[in-house]
Structure formats: C-alpha cells, structure tokens
Length: 463
Ligand SMILES: Cc1cc2nc3c(=O)[nH]c(=O)nc-3n(C[C@H](O)[C@H](O)[C@H](O)COP(=O)(O)OP(=O)(O)OC[C@H]3O[C@@H](n4cnc5c(N)ncnc54)[C@H](O)[C@@H]3O)c2cc1C
Image (cartoon, rainbow, N blue to C red; front, side, top):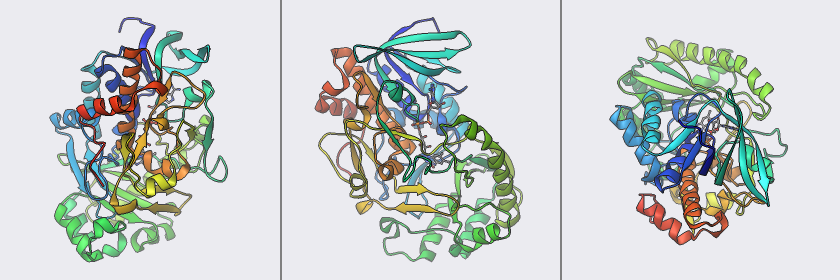
C-alpha cells in the first residue's frame, strides 16, 4: 500500500460493520481507507458465531444483497457456507465456516480499491470548524493523521464519535450494568446424528419454540423432531434446564444462562460454542485483559462438560477459541434518531428505512439472567439513517454495535446481519456525500434507498 494520507472516506474499525461500510463506500466510487486496530479484519465474523439478523423469525431474508451476499458467496466459493438454518427456538441464522470467512473477507475487500491498515489504532481526531479534519492513527510507523471528507466510526465502542464530541449512553441502570463479554470456542469431529438423537429423546434439556412464528402449533417434541430432521448441530441448552442446570450444580460448568451449539463446518464436523461469560466494562482495557483467565477456565469447563455429558461429543476434539474476547455492549452513541424499544418490539416499518433488523430482544445478564423477547409477528423493524449520524458532528457516520439506540433496541440491532446492513447504508451514504459534496444530514434518503435497493438490499415487503 502506497502511503496516502488523504481519502474520500476513512472507516475506523474492521469488524463486520466496518468491512461492510468500506466495501460499500469503495464500490460506490469513494477512495477508502479501512483502519483496524487488530491483526485481522472480521471481528466476530471470524469467531465461529452464526450470522444473526439476516432473516426474521419467519425465515424471510431481511438483510441480503449488498456486501452481505458478496461475503457469503465468497465464503461459499471456499466451501465454507452452510447457509440459513433455524434453531426451532426463535431464530433463523446463517452458518459459516470462520476459517473460510477469514479468507472470504480478504477476497471481498481486495476486489475494491480499499487501502487497509491493520495493527493500527485510531485514538484521536483533529477538528476544524466543527468538522473532523483528520483521524490520528498510531502504529509502528508512528502517528499519522489521515484526512477525509467523511469518516465512519465502526469501532463498536464509538471511539471516534466521542472524540468528535458526540454524546453517549452506556449500560442499564448504571454504566457498569453491561452484558457480559464472552469467548467463543470450537469443537471438531462432533457426531451430529448422536447429538440430535439425544435432543429428540430429551427435549426437556433444550430451549425450543420461544417464537410463536417458529412454533406454528407444534409441540416441544415435534420441534425437537424437526430439529433432528434438519440435520444440523444447532442446539441451545439453557442453564435452567436439567442437563446444564445439573452441570452447574455439580460445579462442572460456571453459572451461565446457556450453552449454544452452532455448526460451522460440515467437512470438519465442527461446531462453535457460546457459553462463557464475565461481567466487565470492556472499555476498561485492564479489566478486559484480566477476563481472559476466567474465560479460558470456562472454556476448559465447557469442553469437559461436552465430552463427559453430551452425547455426540465423546470423540470430539477441542479446536480453539475465537481470535478475541467478544464484546456485546459498551457505549451507545446518541444520534439524530435513537432507535426505541417500541420500534423493535413492534417491528415498526418506515418509509425512510435504510436497513432492517429482525433479531430478538436479547439482553444477557449476570450468570443465568437472560431476557429474550420476540418481535411482533416474527417480523423486522426499519432503521432510519438518523441512527447512524452521531449528534454534534458534521461529517461523521457510524455503523455497527455503537449505533444510536436505547439499551433494549441495541440488544437486537447489535447482531452481525444488522451491523452489516447498517454498514452497507453508511458506506453508501458516505460515497454519496463525497460525490455530491454534501454532509450526511443532507443525503437524499430516497436516492440512498434506491442505491441500496439496486445493490440488492432488502428494504420493503417483509414482515
Ligand atoms: C459472545 C458474543 C456472541 C454473539 N453472538 C452473536 C451471534 O450469534 N450472531 C450475531 O450475528 N451476532 C452475535 N453477537 C453480536 C455481534 O457479534 C457483534 O455485536 C458485532 O459483531 C459487532 O460488530 P461491529 O463491527 O459493530 O463491531 P466489532 O466486531 O467489535 O468491530 C470493531 C472493530 O474495530 C476495531 N477497533 C475498535 N476500536 C478501534 C480503534 N480505536 N481504532 C482502530 N480499530 C478499532 C476492533 O479491533 C474491531 O475489529 C455476539 C457477540 C458476542 C460478544
């Protein structure tokens, strides 16, 4: 990469929202820089987690086309796309192989004229007349100021927005009241037939049919039978049901609301596990760093529990952890519009929507606490551009986990499908700004919607 310090668009943060923002901006003609603090692009896309939020509870695609489909297709070309499945609980998810996805991201980003800086942390902005003039990036080359017409904050924590003066909220009743951080781990050589037979014979251990649009009149047993017939190792053990509750009582597993198993590779008979949790304010890097010790210990416990107590895992092998501790919740940057709990639970539609969300209301608490609520009609809600425009800023957009929302709305919109839809919209809006010499608040929403629709985004016609 040649040393260039001036761009149309600088995207800060290379997780799923940042990737989508950068690809969308570059695809629409903007000279784009993507700055990532860590060694890889991808964030939780390469953790092994499934992609939530691409479909609503009825199984309708609500995030498709655009950048998401390019990534899925690239993953598929590398043999790593399992595709959409349901958990027969509340969700339709898209399962991918994180190893294939790691390459698919590079394949996709490399198709466009995007300069990428890895190992590069943005820690400040320079302001001029109320506008961000440059973002200051530190890496082994030293400190460099990158100028751009439009900046997009995809740091997950809103680092750039707060430096630029945007207000934020954090947590629930107190700023420390945050969803736990977790590390996702993987097991290979899992006997899916045996696991699903166990679930079919003991459905009392798993959560099924939380969404009426998935139940459709079926009994728990019928849902377990359907899960078996689907043939994918998608199993949601909860901490209040016999198998996991006993393991917690026996001290084999730390107190947790769930142990969720998701397929990630058919070839390797591999699954990802989401069960670990530590309550910590992830902005406090010292505390986050300390969390690795108990989290790794919980991984050890989870592996032991699976191998000793869950049929199908007897001959499975531990296959590693995600490349980083996963962060569910930190700052919510307040934007021109704040997504409300009513917007999401009522699955509100709007004529100015630029992205859709459809994941359940999903707040993980301490230990076994977990609030899960379903969206009206198993549908989706529309997200307006105001959710992506931080207050008190001129030339800044944002996408992803740091969106403008109240806590409950954030708990649904934080998932990867929704983050990528927001990124698609933010990057496209940024490119319109640079082409037309305008600011985010001046973007013609109908023109933006047309651009997104032409690139396959789903904005209309779903529940
Ligand atoms: C344990 C767990 C389970 C989850 N389960 C699911 C699931 O099953 N399905 C689902 O869809 N979603 C799930 N989620 C939610 C989802 O993964 C995240 O909310 C989503 O990935 C956030 O994407 P993002 O791009 O906004 O942020 P991130 O993925 O956090 O990306 C931010 C990126 O910015 C970089 N960065 C941060 N600050 C700076 C800076 N100052 N300078 C430069 N770079 C910076 C970071 O290194 C990171 O790569 C889960 C989350 C967790 C933690």
